[in-house]
Length: 240
Ligand SMILES: *Cc1c(COP(=O)(O)O)cnc(C)c1O
Image (cartoon, rainbow, N blue to C red):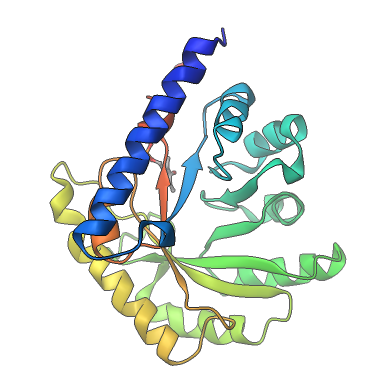
């Protein structure tokens, strides 16, 4: 199943992605090294993640706690930096606190309060969390609505274990990637406003936005973290 051909394919995908990051950054006078690549390994086996680690990928994104747990058991908690990028159900919160370095998908005060309490119980001194924002007012999707954001931010300011590290968005899918630009721009404005009120625990506030088909646009609009799956690992097979 797994072969060195797959390893080589990963390496060439990876170098293509790095070149795309570099040229997008340079096109807007940004330093490419400011952009952190989260390799989204969901639906791909631990062996492929291992190939990526040996090609010097250091950050991985998983959208399901259980799936991540299996891979982290195989590869080791300290083999990489692990980000949760999928919706977190409250019954998985404890596991998530044990497994992840960053939880990018905090979308309610209730979830934040739970994570803060679990950090105390688990003796986790510090957990970096991003707030996932819903700018499309798509009530069915996850992410906090703009109007509810201030209350959550206030709550995070008073947390001692959670450290509010940035904003994340999964915008609606557009055939034409250019249509997503207003969402990225709005998220950046929001980040800048929060930065001005010192909402981010001593940091500048990360902007996690952009996936395989639109990360150049995200970089142009100020993304500091991009989440890339398909362009690195190939298509995901949902039939398995
Ligand atoms: C799957 C996923 C990605 C990666 O998407 P690709 O189009 O494969 O690059 C990024 N972010 C989130 C939240 C995802 O669930």
